[in-house]
Length: 487
Image 1 (tube, rainbow, N blue to C red):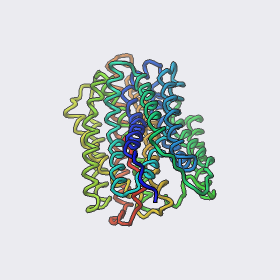
Image 2: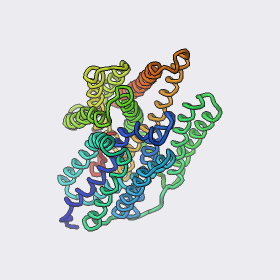
Image 3: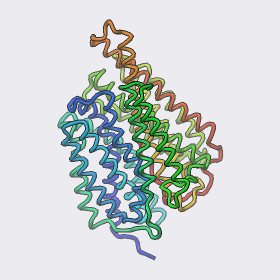
Image 4: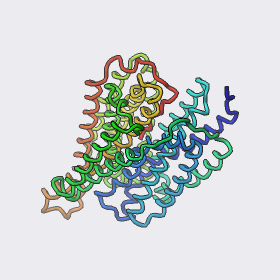
């Protein structure tokens, strides 16, 4: 029996710092969005690519990244991910136009997709004793949950007191320090056996998602009925259909379809996509509402999100304690209702809405709902899974949340842009008035929040109709369970 690594807790600290960087980057840029859009003259229709370029490549390549880490070497993949993430951050921080920033964000997602599963695998193989492993995963999960809060606050501080570019550049010293510490502290490990990768599957899945997001983006500028929009959406359907066809026939699938065909597990992934779409879309519009409509500073906007992050962490603790007694269905149903109600509450926003009355209650309800959903969702996704499928089933929770966020952000931004254009057309006589423009934006936000509420309601209906009351009772391999990334 191999003795435990005497430096395993120091290694955990290094891995946790790297994980914090990846999770933080999903939210730190949100606060900087208005400043980056203005500095690089990015259109309203295209601004969502600052978010979706990252989440698309990160979510779309996570499964492949996990397999690469297993067979290429987890430490080696971890180190490559750190250096690549630093380089992509430098490129984004130095961006002189929108295209460079979008490309840098996509590269961050690519290297994040190598880094995150390698970090998780390193914890699994470093901590072999059950109680220590549970403690290590607790630290890892806390970083994943708290990283969103740190990112929002750090984004506000850096944007206001330095420059929006530092929301990207700050990753460079973090990655370099983590690399320097990981070289002596982290042990190498790799899986044995078949080392073939499903490259065609990864290409088809990612290309299909990009085509779908680009189709939504073109709808914002060209309309839903335009030939270009229809062509991109049709291409997405063909590519994603080809992905499923390929996965059903290849001997080494990126995503074994048997993982999806379990009723409860399939429901958990669908809920993850829908809630990820609604939640990340809310972050996008609330950031612009706080800074552009209410005129808040980036710092004040970041602080405004703190109750949201605190609520998620508190609800996650409560859910983890109640889950063994209630099962996942009850907690997820309550959480879905809270999230839906929160989005409906936001549709009341106006030009001078009060934070305490119109925003804070929604943030609290949404955060509690998300925490009550995502903890049992992770358990549900792994219930009854075979040992050899545990890794991919666990990674799919994070993958579906990121992909849902990408698609939702693009779709909701298109809905917002279309609603604003429609409002201005209906008020053509006053179209040049700043007050009309402001009311048009409010109308767009409200319509987008209605769409988010629909997504949340559909997710809740999926839980109620598809998840069985005794779901999650089966024995599950907790050693491979991955903490969910909140945001």
